[in-house]
Image 1 (tube, one colour):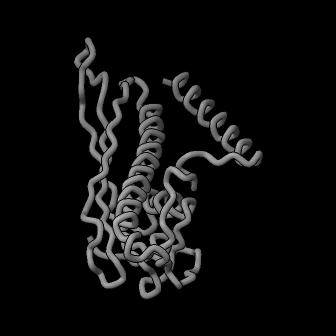
Image 2 (tube, one colour):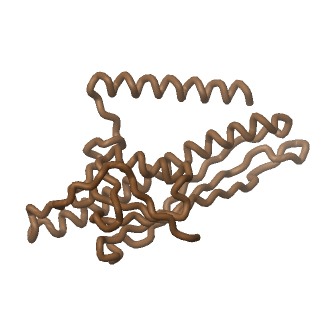
Image 3 (cartoon, one colour):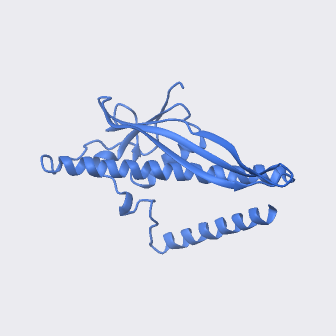
Length: 203
């Protein structure tokens, strides 16, 4: 388990260093503002409504959308409202070893989101996103298992945030194409502040 965690950490560090070098050289990685997730201008002014504004998942979503051009602002100034559900995490056992102990388990993380316009009209229906991963278990290394699960959870949150970004980008492109013939030059006039203004709602 320790060797696997060491390899995971080393791989993550090397990947992060490579990403920094590419960015410094003028390259842009897919999913961080590239054309694959480009949003129309009218979709770049948003307000976030969530029951867990300080969670790691909410921060991942805020950062990823901001990297793709979204400017977070007050609800009264935003063109769109992103309603983000809290992450839901589940764990189930898949198999047992020769000692009748858990050998492999499955991790599932889900969330739901929707998009409203400035008049609170739903323009993107509640959409479920999910990530499923399988992890081997070493019953004799409880501490190592907990550390591995935490790393996998962070990766799953990042995957969920990227799914949300892709779904929003696809829907925005389709909506923009449908209205471009009648309003080809329609762009938002507001210039919202960059810092996110988040509204907390009850569960």
